[in-house]
Length: 284
Image (cartoon, rainbow, N blue to C red; front, side, top):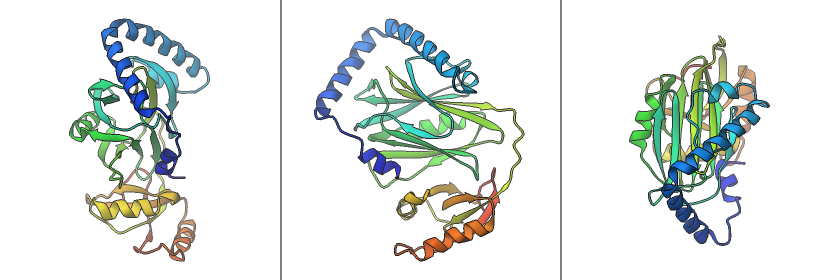
């Protein structure tokens, strides 16, 4: 099931407009009681972090030296999803050290929870794919500047989506970098924490089914959506263009078998082929 399909199946509260208005009012009240709420929320989050750390290895490292505001909802280390269905949200970012906070607002007031989102992790290269639904505005220039300022980031670029209420972007990580993505509420924000994991992971060759090189735009987005149920993702090439890729196979035979399955489908149109590159590199 694609991220868009999961988003569309989220139940909408019957009084959604009322809920949004209440959320706005709560946000205004929060602003007036900012110091008191932040202190109490920090205590709740600290307690939550202690409980989670006891059950999830590596979380203590991910949360160390990170300012905590709000309550921890979940911590993702292998991709996942969360948030609530909404609309009309704007996105801004703030950066501190190796941490990026992705903040959400409605009419200038920070929301108490985050909009529906997915975070996928893939290799070839090592990257995180963020998708947010119910979002109408994104200060992408600031997001790009903040993310590129993180020392463990190799690159960042947009992920064009054919839905004006959804945004996406890709964060490419440098070698031997670990990450955690934490969801908070009251206030609602997503926190990306990067750290050098200390492991010497050996780069290895991976095989993919991929499209030809393309410019960013509607044609690329349409092709990615066509194969979204097959786990497609968009990757930037070494020459600055983009390609749609599927799979991350350990051998060419498996990739070629996967390609044959595409060529007999009725929706097969744009030519696809098998290619390979290293797990920490971009395609040529």
